[in-house]
Length: 243
Image 1 (cartoon, helix red, strand yellow):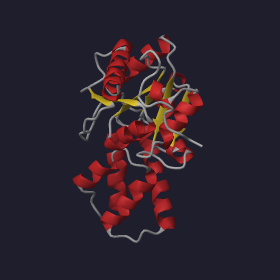
Image 2 (cartoon, one colour):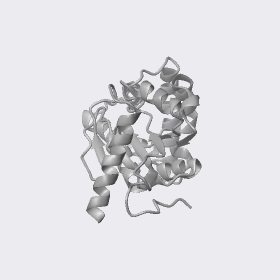
Image 3 (spheres, one colour):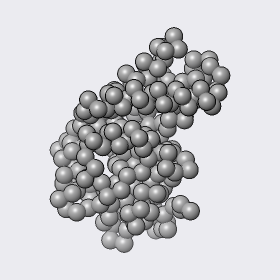
Image 4 (cartoon, one colour):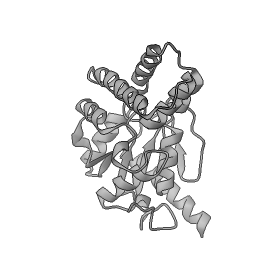
């Protein structure tokens, strides 16, 4: 059974981060724009147009949540078989776009290289399903990650904490010893619920602040030492609040 952090604060014994857990879409690679293309194409097959408000709510959402939102906006019956077929269509269309190569978010690749050089474990934690994630990893590179966890491999995807809890479990570390890097409201909530400290790098949608959160405009110009500093700042503030 997946459980949350064993501690009362999001910190390891010496305030040192033991693993970095990465969201994929919009955090490592700027794939949200490719999802825009696929979602718009799906709407067109039903003779509809996706609203800007709906697209904002879908950032970071799971496939199942996405299709419920899409079908609701289009006024379609929430038929499980039809929605499952639409998920397959959407993923097949997106996979073709992924195969053309994924653009890195500023500073993301350099940060992965830095973590690898220091032998700090990294995990990929995504709401994208395994089949499509594997296509993305062809572009990103599997060698950066000790483990990868996808939404269809846990009981509930983000915003539930399950994907982050599973990643920490596979790495053999407490979630409180981890720094998650996220771009969305959904993903940030999932990491926070799991007990992780969270570095928020907003992409398309603003993400509210919080005790376990620190915001930066971009990963560009940051290095691994900055990640450790950010984690330590969150750790120290949590300790002070709970003292």
